[in-house]
Length: 327
Image (cartoon, rainbow, N blue to C red; front, top):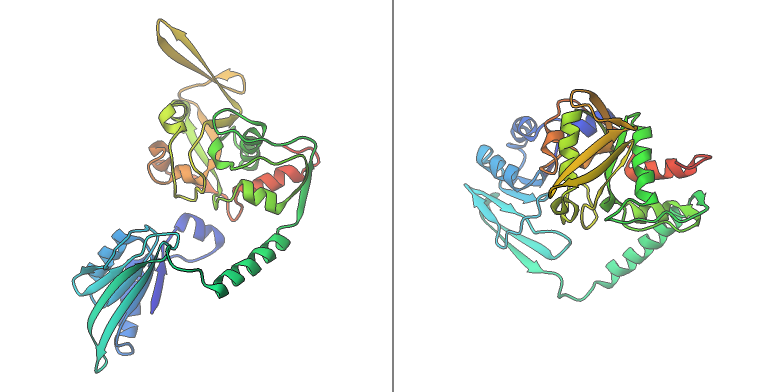
């Protein structure tokens, strides 16, 4: 059995790790195994499409137990002589892969998914989860700060919580503007003592701060896109996002106003009180998920992006709350 995961080089290299692509790792690894193993099983967190490519390129792999893209393959999928297996997400299915071996040779392989949701709970598993939950409760009962008034969240209008997070992003990234979607905050923080558990529940995402540089023209395009009802109510999962929908975009250092003339709306954008300049470069402190996928292609295409690791958004919230005068 060998294992490979997605090579997120931008992040891992910042942590001092030497990251290689699967296509680079596999040839010497398979050569090393060819005289030692009768069967090769790849545990892959590379995603379905990469699994297919690897099965085509490396037929010596007998079985790929895949993940990452959450495909549901009820009986697996065969690419050449390689069986690709993947069982969805959230434990809805349990996969059963059966290998038939004779004389040290694999003569048959098959896969089947079983519905797990209608099965009785395993008592030992439940007891272990309860024990781990109690340990987590104790470990996260670490005081961070005290709030004189609640930090409330609202997905559809600026709130003091989302505005604080936008300001923290701007300050942490040493940017001109902080920019974050309100949907990243899942609940409010009440007045009084705040613990790591409170912050984790409000912001559970494994998302890192990111610094990007945009022209005023590019920034205007993103601000207008983010203000559409379609983007505000977009239901979204993935890229680290553990919420429900995007919500409005909240800014620190940037202000917008809309006027309507003869049925046509015009958006005015200012940065620290001055009109947005189309050709000027602006430093934006934001979240890494905007630089992946198809949410904001303008950010994905940028050549230079600075990611801050290992800090996550909740670390910025804790940092802001622990300051003598909270952000």
